[in-house]
Image (cartoon, rainbow, N blue to C red; front, side, top):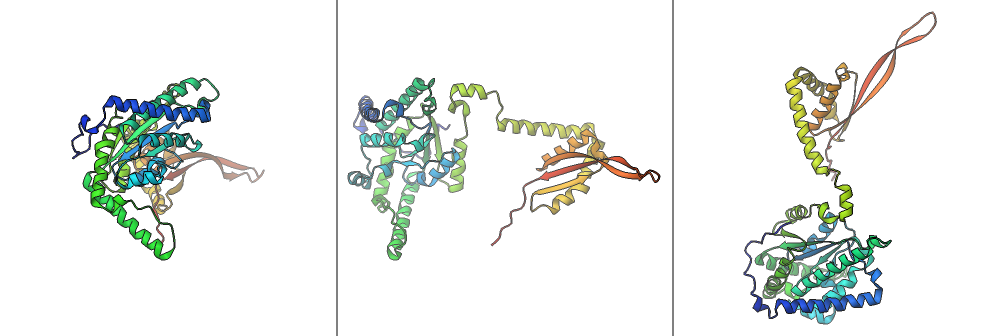
Length: 408
């Protein structure tokens, strides 16, 4: 989890500049939250207030790539539901007028409509909230919501409904870009939507996209970024000490930003699983730990072969080079080769171990089957009886990454 501040940030606004004390904001949040919660509980019943197991709070300046990267974040966390885009939920004419001016809709409306959305069945396993929280009041409401979900988890954990009230995991993911990048991206988006809408109007094909007024005016785009910095940025920063916090540098291209996201969203089972579940699985090693250990042990074994069994090791390498590699090279496209060998060298168990380890070190995966056959080698002319000699065939299947054939 990251806790570093982004480069080139503006000074934090002073508390008195917000026009409201922290105590009053918390009081307002409690009133807003309690009203929204009471309405839901009265309408649906407490046993139906089933919120997502995982909540990702996706924030960032205008033009930081929230919409662009949401699908990738959902896939990275193994979710199948669509994102909850807060601005899309707030589509009344009055709210649209506020948004077009670069301002934000009231906390009471945002919280009420969001809570109702979160309990829809498709978000049971997880939800990505694009654009929430944006104010200190919304932050307090988010804290109160998680407290309530944890309370429900405790109430129902020993009942048949326990699976619907799991302990929640909350990630705060902030995509950061500086003011210049934000304004440039907003205006570029505006130009692209203008061109697209013009084509739709000219051809009659497709549906027009919503064009924000702030995406057309540099001053309004700049104002929108500064509204984010003066309110939303501080609100998101305040969640650092409570939830998993990820600050992602979103200044680069798509691939670079995706890699930054993946790095921040690495799985942390000890933090995300229910404590009782984690206690049961914690004794099993992580795949990453096994891979690291296996690589270290492979290096030690190979060095040991070379040092302690040099002659045998040389013979194995020579067999691979002369007998195996020509066949592997002929199957380079498919990434799979099968070699049958009766070489007596392979009858030595240590030679087989060396063969497998050498292939592993070189990036191949070798699987060996030992087949015991009987080969006819004599006939009794008087009785017609056929005599056999034992014969061992080693069938070695070798897998590796084949070539990609591009067809135009």
